Picture 1 (cartoon, rainbow, N blue to C red):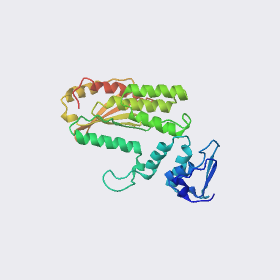
Picture 2: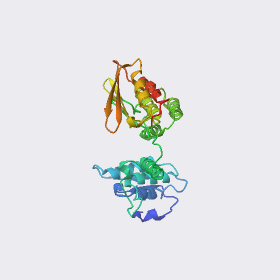
Picture 3: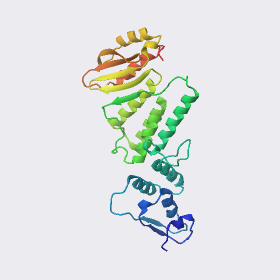
Picture 4: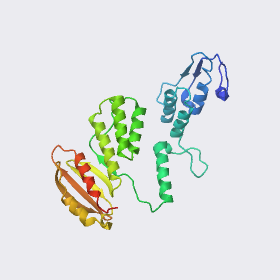
Length: 285
């Protein structure tokens, strides 16, 4: 039978075992999913052939075809709909637009950002517990050699980034070792960065930057804190095997930059795990 997309409306031929979709790049994701579902409705093994031209496809079309190719199991409708939302973008929260630009940030991040802003609006005076930004030139990642499947890698990246407690990170680390084997150096480093974010989230540190031979720690509103004198004394008295010297530099808006000058060949992670303990007994906010 040769027909148009009318078959997506619910044609049910139990014995049909093959469907050929010409110019599949022109169809919507939900259309492709519905048309594919017209075959294999009986006990016979079915196939869906997607025909595309020999030319470079547009990015949204390629994503639609990849999503259909990836979701082949029974009950994949939810995953298909989420992929469609990622590709087309969500509509306006207030208004009549049915598509948007959510694909530029990702649906989950969009939801997280929306949730964060709603909490701020409901409790404007609530204490800020956001995790600091940590930048490093050192390689901290989950490599393709360690986890080949990109979906698994993205999922672990997301879980690590969302971790709020050290126990959560330890659980992820244990799971990675059990499933994929011993952690590579760059993945261990990624987990170290995540642990530092958790530890510094309860402090006034807003950013940590790893540069050549030094680690810069940026602390906000340092001039407004009652424990300033004690904190400065504790910094000047800070000693660590990997730290050669410590420099203090005032920044704008009563902020302070603390530079830990490292000895040769030291990464500075151990120094930061010791440095964060300086905040334990101080009244800094």
